[in-house]
Length: 271
Image (cartoon, rainbow, N blue to C red; front, side, top):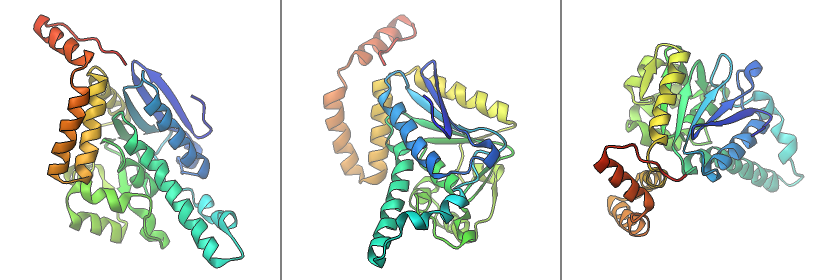
């Protein structure tokens, strides 16, 4: 897949989406926002892609939203009616939210491999992923507060559920302070810290390969259930999985996995 601001590769069922504006510290301009959505729509729709990794090219994962994009927004939404200008701004914000939500609604697990800076819009982005891993040089910041705005693309909505600690989330949101890799692991923002970027990429790819070896239908169902249960009651979640498995359980994957288990072979699954 060819995009202006991200690169997408597919190898052994693992899609790698790489933010690709290294000369700008992968600052998220408008083209990148659109490319991210297109890339994860492609991952979602491509059967051969069973799992995805998102990472950054160059020195940093991402420095967040491109400030030149921010300064150029007004002409694109301006109307001689103030109400319509504000409606246009609301629609723009909703569209940017949907861009990152494309990661969350992608049926395949998405693993973030983070090095260097992950600030501002980068926090919104990684909060949409299934799991997050980083190298020892990584740092994180909810930077919007330092440019006089309230984060509006998902961080404040998703991080409290990811970290399970309102006090920590509020401290980071109110202060914009940096969180280093060690603290990120301690508060549950990332699953694991690797010594180097090379070790990070190798470790995350190994984990992605493990996921890719499982039943694709079951992996997609597991993500669907986890996302649904995150946003609903336990009773709702139990009811949904009963309905889901009534439809999906009796699959070729179930037979293949059971037969492979009895013969101590590695199962083969259809994409």
